Length: 312
Image (cartoon, rainbow, N blue to C red; front, side, top):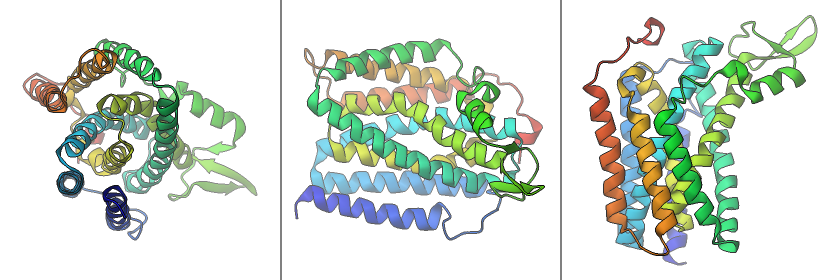
């Protein structure tokens, strides 16, 4: 058994144990996660991702490990942008806080499955048509420029979401409370609840974000191990990150601009890779500088008040 196979086995075992104990497959169905709990859970996921970075360095070498941590930071930052839209979805549909954890769990598990499918398709396409990387690069530059000037969260309207409109057309939907269930019988007829709608919207929303994030990780590396593990670790931390950021949305007004600059840089790197190779350490430094700079810039600028219903 070679080094890569051992790494996959270790990752699979860590992933299985982490899902069982942290994502709540053996926990109560409905419970509210506090900011303190969310903080510890977020530290756990980041710590686990960094521990895997150390393991990769030991098992597969410095380059693979640096590619992994660069890809992880890239995916993690894009997942933060994803979180803000999740918050809008929960708020729009008026979902009770005690159901947040279970809905996020199901949405995230569905997102992981979709990500694995899309990454596999991307790997096959890049292997057969290497020129597609230039299309990815141009797309990332375009997306980054657009993201810099357009506020995704303020322009996101769940009521106009195509998936939501489609679901309402094909499924009987009720807004009545069903005690945390996904279906409810009314006068003998089965209806789907808003909780079910939200689960589907969370998963499909992540698919939209994956259109940006998966091409971005190909700009950092074409190593299959790095692409799969960095994406999955970033997505697994979404639930705790949601509870941590839910009460502090307004403190990161300029994070989107920081992420946009990273996308432009990564897209440009992909476009010029044939003519000039940018060292992975430089890429990692640019990613960290943009993210930290946008966070610090956001903290030291006046923000709008946090809505009362988002405070704990």
